[in-house]
Length: 172
Image (cartoon, rainbow, N blue to C red; front, side, top):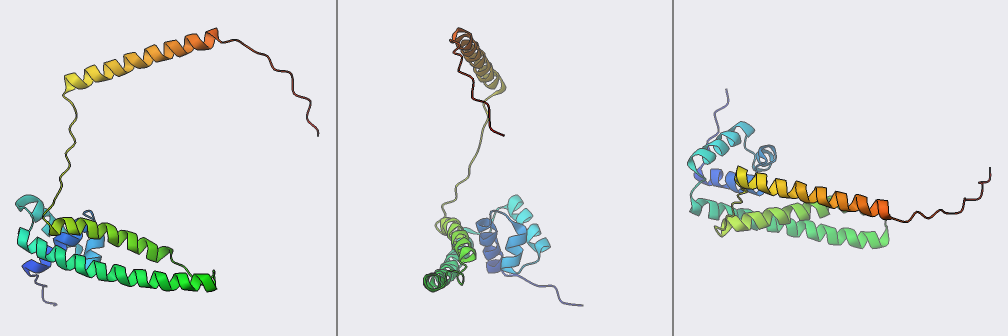
């Protein structure tokens, strides 16, 4: 029977950074970080309950992730440049869509991970108004819509009807 893998705090911090960069996508993160999905899900649940790894570990892992992702993005950009040169010579021989997507994805991940590296985490909260306030807003909206509909109906009734000449018969 195979021995159970052990992970260091640095491994966990890196997994946290990659999971954050992947917007919480466990499957993609497991594939990229080469960590079993079940392990990653367990860690995610622990982080939700007890908080993420230490700020220092996350900052260090985010910095390493940013460095690696920037290097890979640079390599992809080099290949895109080479493909563009090929495209000038043979339009059928260059396919850059996949690499362009890679650059975009890595740029998004770099931006997110760079925010973790600096400790700039932004949480978004969405709050609905209180039920009484929401009811008043909806009532005002509906009343306004009814008034607009009535005005529009009156405009349509008052409109002049202009008859147009009949179109000539079509050719068969």
